[in-house]
Structure formats: structure tokens, C-alpha cells
Length: 212
Image (tube, rainbow, N blue to C red; front, side, top):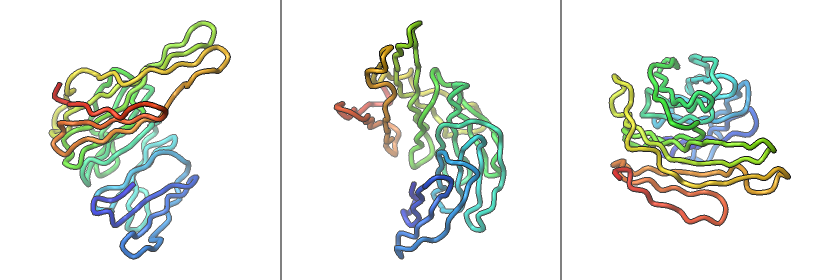
């Protein structure tokens, strides 16, 4: 993950997050977290949000933990410098945490969120969500969707922007054949009008109008 000015690059190896000063090509600091998992750094390089079996907010100035909450989160991303979002897949829920690392509000998704992306202006949150259907003999089908929410006003529950958009379907058979779950990525335009979606495998990249 990068800071807003690209001066700070963060990468994880196991339980350690390495923070690199890209301007001077130096390792700046290393943050050791209790467990591996998703993380994100704030645009102003002051905070880091991480998730293992808990959601945690860190102060990067002194590498101290600000707060933790016992929630299992699949992905995190920052909305500006004072809030971050987290994907609670098991509850079909995206939470919004404040600068004190406390959950303040959230939005219900149709399917379980597995990845999150916030545009640079902090007005839209896009989630890749997953619905799984398994048969009696262990064969499963995986349905991926794009769900977008208006997070410009956190004084109210963020409303959905349009219905979920179907992205792709994969499956596994009872012998373990097939693709199963696949990785996907999303980029949201600054005006929140377009979403660029790419998935692994031999699949074309899709450009989606979020206004449709």
C-alpha cells in the first residue's frame, strides 16, 4: 500500500509490515503486528489499520496501537486520514472506524465483502462481494459482485449506489476440479463514475459505469 503522496510504501511479510521511504530509498520503520492479515496506511502517513482476529489502528509516528476491536475483517482501506473501512465478510457488512479506532457506522451488503476500495476523494466505497452455493456432494459455485456505496456523509448510514453488479462465476466439482475462488481487483475513478475491474485467469478487464 502507498501513502497519498507515494512517499511511503508499506508491504507485509508474515506478521511484520515494512515501511519504506520511497524518496530516499530507505527502510523507515517496521511494525510488528500480532498476526498476518490485510492492512492499509492513511494518505498522510500517520496511521495504519490492520486486521487479524481483531481490527487494529496504529500510530505510525511511534508504532503504538491506538485501539483494537474483536472483529474478523477480510479487507481494510482508508477514507481520508481520519476514517477507515473494513469488510466483515461473515456478517455481509462494511464497517467504518474513526480516528480512535472505534466502529462508528456501517453499511449492509447483499453478499459477503472480500475486498474494499475507496476512491481518492473519499466519496465512494466499492466492495467485491462473494456468494457461495454448495451442493450436497461438495461441489460449489462462487458468484462475484461489485457493490458500491456513497460514503460522502458519515453522519448517516451510507446508501447503496445502484444494485450489485454481477462480475463472474466460478465453480469446483466434488473431485476438487475447477477454479474455485479467484482474486479480483478494482479501481474507482475520482469522480466515482467508473470502476475498472480485473480478475485472474483468462478474463477481460471490465470498465463499469457506476451510474448505470
